[in-house]
Image (cartoon, rainbow, N blue to C red):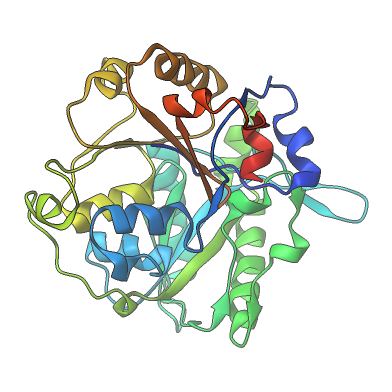
Length: 323
């Protein structure tokens, strides 16, 4: 299974998002809509359906042992136009460990003494966890769903969204004068415009028991548990909570292991990579494996070697099918 967590588009913008790539035209069954997205799909694969609708921040908080309300804070670079503010396609920033430590220290100094006792913790290069913000009824949007678009329609809304918006404004003002941004500019790196708050709610929303490494074998249909590859923080949380093995994308001989794995399923979660996708398709056609499932944009497409025999089926653009 190949999961692209960073692809979110409508039919009208497929050409703009992936127009530079030659879309493979293949025979495959109709795309299936995933109401809970790729996170829900992985949760079900792990035999943990109760986590399929959990708040993303609650998953991370549970993995880290954080109590109370939690929010994901993602560093972003905004591009200001004459009338609108956009999040460019490369607008989600990955920060070095020293940069993240500097931000956490500065945030603690500025916001830690507030009545809310706000606290920021570094989780990964592109992920922080914010605690202390009580706004469980606010509705927020994953910034990856706003890439290349105007951010106005993605701002927090709902009954308690006012305090989230207010904090976002304070964070942007704080970041504007950050010495770290001056250093990044001097190095030719993009400024950090915001720490986008999303996926929040009470961490107690997640009810789980951390499984033993053997537990998924008993929960899943099949003899062997799936093997997961990926650096995504939410994938790490799900694998931890489900007791599943996760290997980093930097793992040596990753592709060979994918093709030669004896597990019942291999799940690869990574940003879109056209070259890697082409290699997998070629391996499928050679018979290295029987089925390739592609997940993106809350849809799933399953491609099988047997599909090529159904000559009466029309060949389709897989990118448009996923839209």
